[in-house]
Amino acid sequence: MANIPESDNVVRVKLIDTTTTMVGTAESFVQPVVPGHEIINFCSLAFLLENEKLGKKAMFDLGVRKDYWNLPKAAQQGVLGPDSVIFGMRVEQGIDEVLRNGGVDLESIGKGSLGNRVTSY
Image (tube, rainbow, N blue to C red; front, side, top):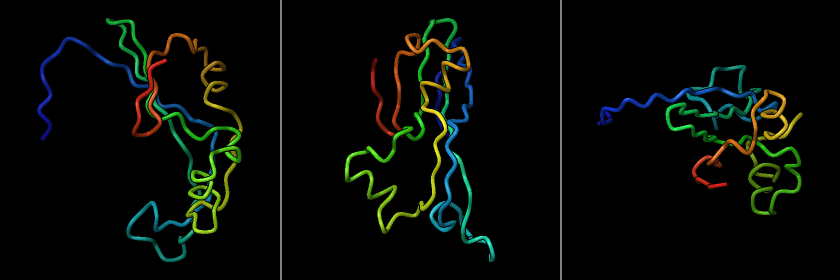
């Protein structure tokens, strides 16, 4: 069990549909694989964290970039290479477009995480 210290701070978490849909091998994402469902469709989600008391916002995971084919070669191999577990992908909007269309001022977001890396803006 996590040992979380007491606090008066409350964080609102908003789940964001990044408009990314993918097709891939089920075994890489779920266990056990249900027979007949070896291939799955799935999406990419991001999270906007808001602390009104502190007036701060942060993003956890930024989804898949709209021009994923321009990723560095090493990253492309993981997503698009012959050994990739993802073999179909469509990204309709970049996370910046999704946030703006949802009324979020990009300048109001102080930190962002690319899955396991935190970046200050």
